[in-house]
Image 1: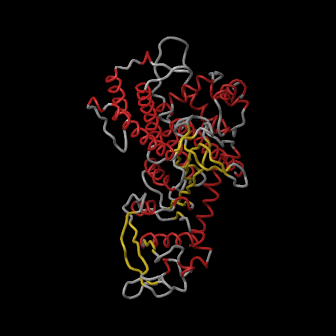
Image 2: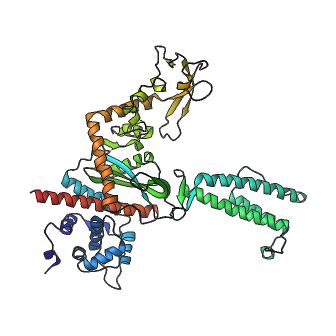
Length: 507
């Protein structure tokens, strides 16, 4: 008898196998090198099916568990045709064979599922969650601290060069003194200094009872400072432009605040920011970022969605972490409605006292003469205009100053600083916020908000609590993306099987 004879017709592995037969799996396996000697290769199509089925059934499955399942589990035996690859074989297959094509596999499986299930891709529910990295939680490097240490080292180098220049005044040689120094310049200076005094490192002394010469001490300090500068340069380079920290044991992981218990208590841990877009309970798009905030993740996620499906979603629904000027402008430019909350959305819509506060700059009346006035009828005069930090679209804000705040009866309620009050005004952003409020406060918007909490947040809840994927196993950004894509494929296949099972039971 065949193994399939022992399985029910609605068994998950048979549903999975029938579905995968409709996809051309061979096109993802073209990178396998050909060998004409040695033992016969395992069927790569069977290997791919086995790996994907493992992630479908377990949420996350380790290499050793894959090996064990192929020995004892009828479903895995069925897919592997009684063959039992070792965990090393599975590791090589995942890391070397399907790594580069895993996103294509994810998109193609989604296309097939969405075609069968008639998934609505115009409504995309977006959410992000931080997954702890497989890194030492106390091995952080902070970019700002590194930059401060580097500038302190620049001061030490300047002081050392002053001593050396005084020492070498009789030779006419002089090292230039700057506010900053490159490691290469310090190395070159050390070589020149050693050449002047004909220093030989093999003759240097150290330890108790030995007195170092002035020349030896200066040379050792120069070499030490050069190595230290190189270390600082490397650390700043690893951090890059968009990050403020990284872990020494996983350079791609950024330190983020992560909720560690059900009470919402958080802890600073090395982590990755996983972003998903959910459509009709399926993960339509997924991305892994190193940014601490969700705000910077919106545009890359939308571009990945467009690359996969050829268009942008009409209604991207997200929480307050995504509402920013950059994201709103991006939506306007690409035909998307604004359904992303901004930071003060809840207070604007639920706190009537805050919304109608007469001392908020947005509530200051503007007369027929175009002049903005405070509750004390004092005019605000335009001072200057400046670019907003972090804006990708040249956003500017206008700074206005009150003509006279002295003897104002509302001073304690109106301002917190000495002198005349200044306010920042951006009418374009204010109008965008009002548009977002109108969208989300409508009946359609209320339904979308409720659905987002069910679909997007619910998907992460299933992944973390039901399918026990709470922490990243691999290290490095590319490896973590590979892992998250496999978990997402498994999640969608798991969801698809459950829906098919419910349909068959209802029929």
